[in-house]
Length: 67
Image (tube, rainbow, N blue to C red; front, side):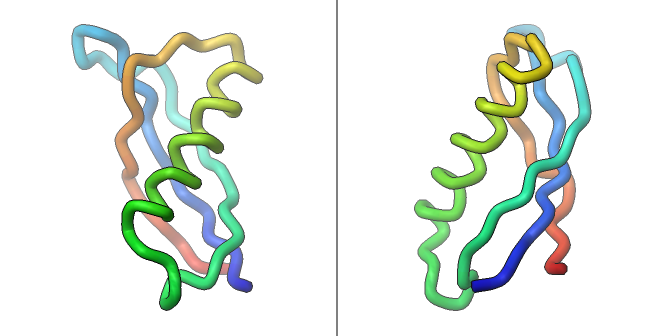
């Protein structure tokens, strides 16, 4: 199991950047389908936004780094 840090931006309904943050995702990326990785990211980003009291309409991945 590898750990990835995903840097992303949370966007509002108009497309404006509301916040920038990062989340950690633990997975074996060589055995993880893209849809599964995006689902892991979306869940982590939504939880991160709630934690920071931000209501983002969508999330955009900026960078993925393997630790």
